[in-house]
Length: 384
Length: 174
Image (cartoon, rainbow over all chains, first blue to last red; front, side, top):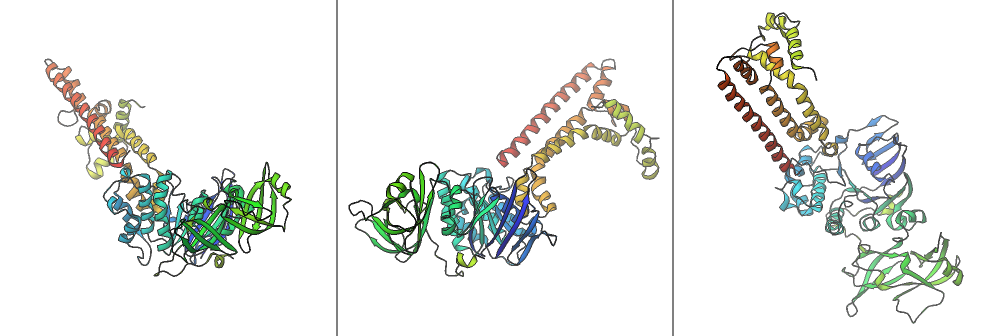
């Protein structure tokens, strides 16, 4: 378990406060806009930045405790740090970069082998090259490998994809998913990207202006109203934990089930019974008072309004309960008035099948734990 | 910058036969600097010292501290980081500083003549040899030859410096 409870004020006046517990494996996303304090938190964990108060305990070892005067040196903390700008050593080959941390590891046993890392990240053909001859994506993969080979107790990733273009991001994301699924290693993942957070993380710590505004499982946190300003109206949506129920080969559709209902969506490339996380953007959800049968919309779900939040400008956010799962709809304030929507009313939520697209990264497969590793602890258990 | 003659004079006062340090160097270790090649070397080193220091300081500042932090997260101690990251990355600067020092030593005049005089085969640098040749009857041919030698040396060291620089930059991709 990783306990973070820190507070600090930087010389420029920026103050940060964070308090959360992360599980021993899986990805904990630090999510927020730039300047929210995400990077400062992982710098504090790495020992690059020293908090004013609080403590950091990783796997039973105290890295930092202001009250007890403990502050481990950076090199004693055994954290693998992947920087946004890769920071490969320019005077060394890729292989020597990879071996740098490996040969200096303070781990009692070498758990992560050179060959397996090179294989996992697909960098075997790059070993003899110099860092400056690599593409941005290759550089970042080597940086991840270098961090892994130092046999860390905790992997810190500071927006590893932010400096890359869309194509390079899509190139690296599968490697990050493999990393998450194949290594029993806790990962702190700093990101401002909703897509990356949804695709990779289990636990989310949402930060705004140096304050922790929400903390919990990804499904729950990304649905909270206080997190909405960070996500932005365009990307706001709900996550549904689903299971593939059946495939319809004639129309190339899949039926996926969630707690409280089903969705018909474009064919998912997963076996029946596989778990996945479906994301429905709030602005893709429409509401009707009576069941509209003569419509092209393929998903009509009975729902109960649990909250009506009128927002600035034309928007209103309607929180719905689908009989066990939460869904949010973004409609106009005018529509709220016209339909007389209020708390407790029963409505029909309409979700176009194509709005939930398996090809988009926000429709991500949930993990399949590899057999040799212990199953990851559920996010619920990790909550205090 | 201090005139070289002043530097030479100060060296004479401190390291000369009766200088504050020089007398002990001779009495305790038998080291004589006046009129010797060793003395000329000291003079060249002292004169080029600011050049070397500046080159090394600039190259130290040019080393990305982010790389040093990265090295420490990988388990390297401060000393290890200095030896494995900082120093190798400073190498281009140290090399160019050394080349500048050699070039300035080859052209040293003022401090040398004041501190260790102009002794043929001992303390006579190329500029001193040119100076001496121009004071001799029929020395013009000798002076001309030496001028050619110094021009060639200067060009060669300039060329070497840029070559080394380019090689290292290419290696590190900058």
